[in-house]
Image 1 (cartoon, rainbow, N blue to C red):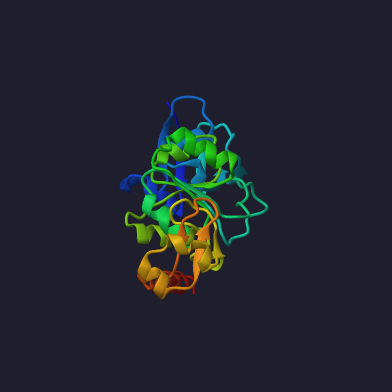
Image 2: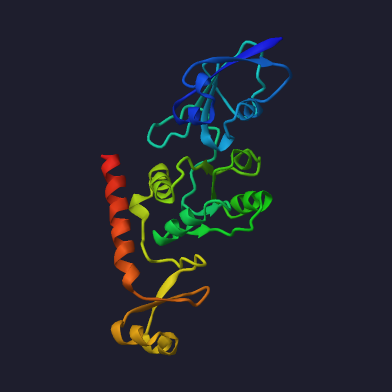
Length: 252
């Protein structure tokens, strides 16, 4: 049987069994296959890959693997200029917007808290998520490798962390979002934008204590929910400050 040797680099090894990480590994080549299908059959979603080399030559996802090939697979490059080579994923989206799978509800809330356009519903199925990502040019965040292997998905990311706070730190680092954070600008419930509203316009909707203690209010343009800087505000502000400090500290 013919064989092909594959070497994955950097964080792409997260998707591999421990005995196949960081080393060239030889696999049987039983049939004619594209390099995209080959790397996904080994567990790595195409959305995680930015550069492919076959025997030292840059190739695209449609390259047909040949017996004896040595394939090198590299992750997304954020700072290294590889423009002379063939980048296999589309250019980064100008505006970071997200759609999240059903298991990442808390992460969705944190991203909205930071001001990022984040679609989330707990009843989206895989086909719907892939369609939304493609049609609305949103980055699909998921912990489902199979979902990222769908051909319709061009911009996606496999979230490694388990805890929601660790997840939001990971996403902010991965997509270099620290400079784009606009806290308290989106509705945590529906993702709509918040706008200042006169107290008189919402007075009849406020609890008695809130009417007495607060004068600044914001209203969601989409679901009409009213916000104010209540007891939870200082806690959330401290959380955002801690997140920013950690992300910026790691970048220096």
